[in-house]
Length: 186
Image (cartoon, rainbow, N blue to C red; front, side, top):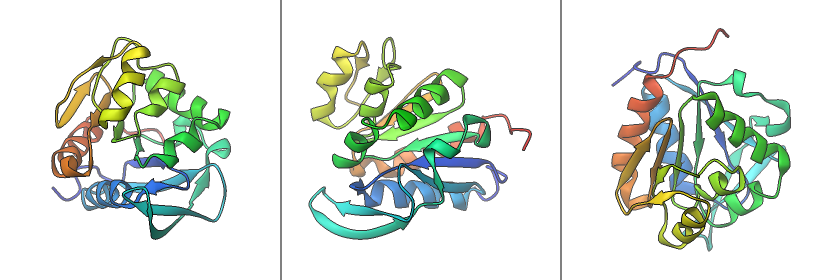
């Protein structure tokens, strides 16, 4: 699968409380396929990762701040989960606008576990077929999404998955979907 993404730039929007495996494994799959992935966040420095929301799991360096980037800087967007991470992002107008603009651009966006909460706050869930961690499904349904319980779901430019157990299928699918994205003029 090497080089199928041929240097495409992927933003990974995350904040403190990100589920480590949900950032690390997709990023590795994307980079193994030739992508250049950057961690974009709401504060500079490092973000605190977690295992199963409760256990400290080290940090990730922040490459860029969300209020300093544009959809035009990337070909695709990854939204990992963890309960705290999307809750922090949905309180930051720049992060909400970034997600909304990405979805509206038609470029591929992928999210796993609690990450689809970002679609609720950005008001882009309506009419979409999505999956997520079970506790997020009511919010998605209330936001107008058709919610399903499947390993990985792609509806237009949005791909969603349920949990870390689904990472093998999720990683494979996002590489496929991100490879379909046109290269930007950067």
